[in-house]
Length: 179
Length: 215
Image 1 (cartoon, helix red, strand yellow):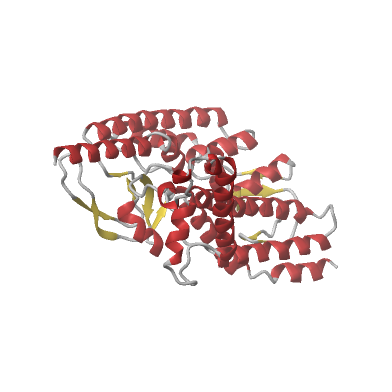
Image 2: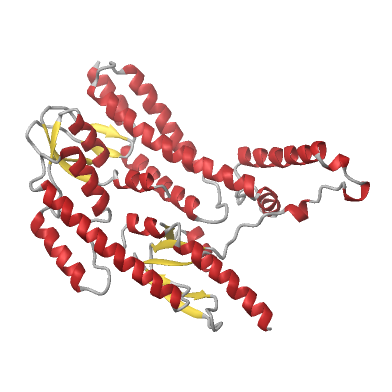
């Protein structure tokens, strides 16, 4: 899958915004949003939030987890654990990227958050690489991937399933020969 | 004027449409990641296309600079992407596995057919054109004993042993995974909401009943 498609999926996540206009409820096919009251927070999908923000029609409120304190804690847990820890959002990296990209002035300590997110991502990717390596070496055929987020799974998609397919083919041949 | 539009827009039954859209998104991802062609979901697709059509009509009635127009258009574009990508993936698979999918559907009743009627027509035409093409370009110039267009020799079968990522939507016990290096069979239980990588074959049936979602 193209990373842009993972982003596309993440854009369906809801985020709070503070609009600077008044408008009644909008009936979208994917569900209702609004009503919009200037100055009052309201939940909208990210794709809508970034569009409204670009048109200077709202301010984006950072999700609960998107602050330095919480993320430092997540980072600490991730570094202490041998396994993957549960991320505060299924799309933490994409959400961070989209919201900080569209509205870095709205989110306090945007640059620090960006750095911590990148650190968490790097840590998890290196864990992922070493576990894939270990998994292939023991000749595994099934693995549990709990707490891996969509973008992380997508990053190993071109390689891991394909490698396992090839190994399976080789094993089948070995079995036929040894019979 | 404004009020009349609102009534028209709220007639969409947002809860149902929302559910349909959500299901379509799951169906789209399953089709995208499964090695074989899955059963067609024309009802879902038609339902969403109806919704979109209705929305387009409602948008026509709004003034060009109405605040809602941009938002609704964006949403329509997003849904249109899912629908077209879904149908495109299916066409791709139909082209690749044309002989196989046609053979499989012969043994199924109309209600259980994997191909929708238009897809069936497409598949048949595609195969006929392929045969015509081979005949015209090459076969008729061959010695008479190798002029046959032998479908059986050209079948491409999807690799259902390939590995996929999945999420269990409910708990499933006793999924049997084919032998590893030492040829040992392994049985695994999938907890609700857990994520896995494994071969497609053992979970293919669960995918069809909706117990797992490919990711």
